[in-house]
Image (cartoon, rainbow, N blue to C red; front, side, top):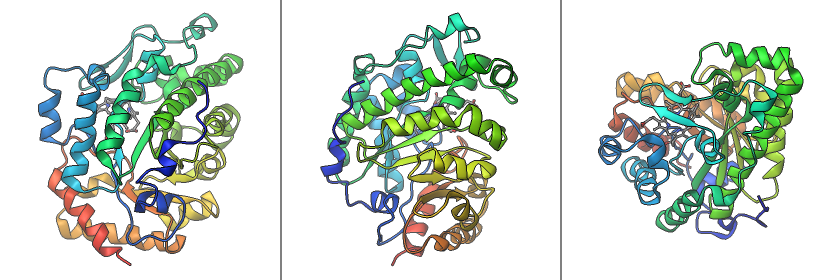
Length: 356
Ligand code: 1CP
């Protein structure tokens, strides 16, 4: 993928948004907030427009992607939109037979387990995903001063689906390859880094204002194994987009012991789950980095007063960062059964409680 000079978003109307200012550690009028998985299954308007359309098919329809991406922005008044897609979209685009099965998640028809299988993982070109470029163009025009976050899956998390063949709890086959066939593993995550970097570059060239690299399942690794077997590939992704002018966010679940290394891999903003208070996380990621997080998603099932108390605790812990550099989010994604009104109330509360 040829490298765009800098993102068109650098000179766009979202440049001075509270979200991008917080990513850059600049002073903000209030703490920005958005939610991972804000578009999707918790919203009745999402379920309505998705009726009868498969998950991956829906990602290839630009008008539908625009509508689904806009739904949580309209409803919740969040400070950023996240592009509606999925981490397996670039795999499908390079020819991997993958489907997203309702109630299951991504399922790979022929898992990747041998050196011969690796040949199926070729680099991604912009022509492989014309629908992504088109949808982002539509969205940037519609969003105006609200930033659009692009994203991709990180090499470890993508590898876990490709090697296991689908979602898995313990990643046994993935780790068997990582520990037992380190050269094969290194080539696998390197090829995934190339695909992921290509997918992010397409999104940046099309106008996203920031990118988030989801390494959702990397928290299952010990720090030394992460450093040896995963970090080089994640670093390669971040380096590929380092000079394009957009903040790079890095997130995984259960990554308390990995926060320092994930920061070092090249993140400008480190996403934190709810297990580590932000003042502690701030020490682990080091100075100059912004943090994103980290209310336990399950708190949203408690009464409003409790949600507000817990949200205030998150804001308090973030004071350790100074007057900026915090993006409020949940510690992981919105759950399908969550009450959308509770999320809207939370956005309003964070805006009010953090107003400066
Ligand atoms: O039909 C449906 O509605 C299926 C549910 C669904 C949705 C709404 C899937 C299947 N993917 C998505 C969209 C999606 N996926 C977004 C949209 C934008 C938004 O956040 O609003 C994003 C960012 C993702 C990213 C994603 N997909 C991740 C990383 C984020 C995370 O939550 O950790 C992962 C791990 C996936 C894989 C995936 N896709 C879908 C499911 C159910 C899963 C997880 C399966 C598992 O448990 O392993």
